Length: 500
Image (cartoon, rainbow, N blue to C red; front, side):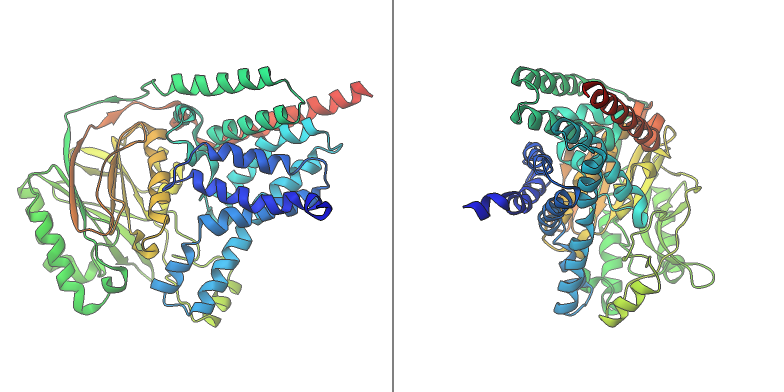
């Protein structure tokens, strides 16, 4: 019993991490995020910074071990890696990203130099979000998966998203957990806990009713084509013509739509290979039917450059090359070490070039729109950079790499946040799912079934105006949070000095 009591937080922490995974899609037990954070914050009390970091690392193992286990599927099932190599790399991914909760705990306890319970609990939310920002935006080009705010799309806290974005909303969620933890530790009264939580969440519920943007035109009829081409069949040369004909036929059945969209790299060939006999005739037909067609395919550039590309065909022809590339998927950071490791495991990944962030907006159905390709929808800056000119958002994705796992559901949840942040409709088109139409409130209006060939039809409104968040962006919000942390540290330091 004494041994259990001594190590109880180390035993509980991984379980709490798994509970946080359950707060995200497809499980959507959103309020488990609060309980999970309460546990991890309490585990940092009355211990050294190193012990707190250990507990948070175990928490991270539970979180990332359950939340990104789909990495194995992409590496082994579709990447062709041997079982041992895939398991090893998946474990490395989990072990590595678990360092960030550990860093959060270490910094929090270090900053709370006298280990006072109040200091730890009040500092924890700010440090948590600042580390999330570093992990999600800066480190290795960013890995924003399992950031806590994404679990709150269907709770009252979603009302804050158009104002303070993912990081501001995440702070309010973490602050809720800290307040409850403080109540459990009896450092504040239960009545105070209730009042603070009701105020935070009640205000969020009210803000959810506010409309920050407005329609600026007639409805746009859309047709989103989910080709459902298996990833292990997609690039086989003998399947190319079959795939091209399938998309062409589905498109020709829907020329009545104002806008037709294909998923990421729906065309399994380089642009130069299909320009004359396939793309040009499609563009001519789209123009004749007064329809805008958006397609996606890889393209070759100069000096062995390769781009992940979206084209608009019809009246307004244009091109967008993916800007925010996926590390270890579309390019290899930490060279030459990463290349050596992957070559040793017989794993070969693509090498793409960024199109840059100064590309002109594409135009379809008479309006400019914000384009994102796959992983780019995880970064708010890629969407708000296009505001207020963009009337809607388009994301093309291929989540077939992850099979029938939780990843497509998590990815859709992340994409939904972009609609809510900008107050725009999002048209998200995927190869095997989840294809859907997302309203400006971040909720899915229509969606296609996973792993089925489908044409999802619906209508959207072009939107104008700007949310407060779209005006300022993450950098300003995070800078304000950092300033609040500095002020809080100064206040707590003065309080300790006064008490002495």
